[in-house]
Length: 157
Length: 117
Image (cartoon, rainbow over all chains, first blue to last red; front, side, top):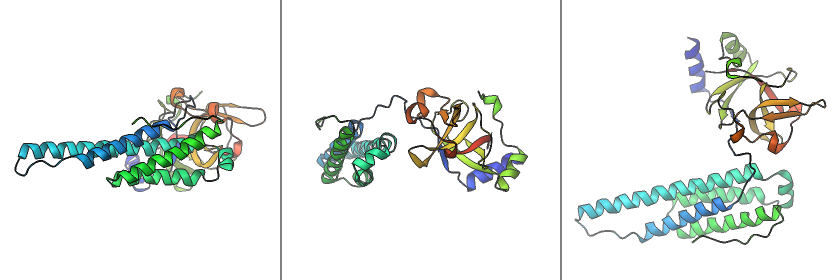
């Protein structure tokens, strides 16, 4: 009876979250992880666009085509989500109020970049991916400025 | 320090206190309170601000740098000046006072009294 009541309350009235946060205590942050994921999204977007449709009637070729298309899309989706997660962790865990004072556009920059991660998921759009990378480059600049370090922006591709 | 056996499942008394607003519910996110609390476990906490706190209590608190970010941690120590040191049980996977420093009494939302399951 008690278990049933508790279960009903839990199912019908979600409780707010209390974070038993699972970041490592090492305090190591780097926007590079978001950049790598965003580059993967760009790469998969290019591959999707480049994918050639097989000849009509070739069932096996169409199966392969759809399988490859689905795999590319799944990876694009996954990497876009990773990029968003990396940005959100960096935003909420690394940056502190003094950083915001020095970089008043911090929240807006991260919010727009996180939104752009959704944009590249929804679309197959090279321009949107490049825009996301530009945003991460801006975050890279802010991040390293907070550490008083000059770290050149670069991409793996 | 608190152990798994010390935190009981909510009984009728706790349920009644919840119904009368003397308990609040929170859902655990993350792994830092393992093995005591797993992700998606729910807990009940006290709502009175004057509840006594001691080393070993599991508490729900506001992050010192972001009051909207709610943490669940264990009290590692309470200094003479009232500053409270919070720590995760699973210290390999916890962001706690080792990173964000001590918290004040005002940042403690409540003490965990039971697991709501």
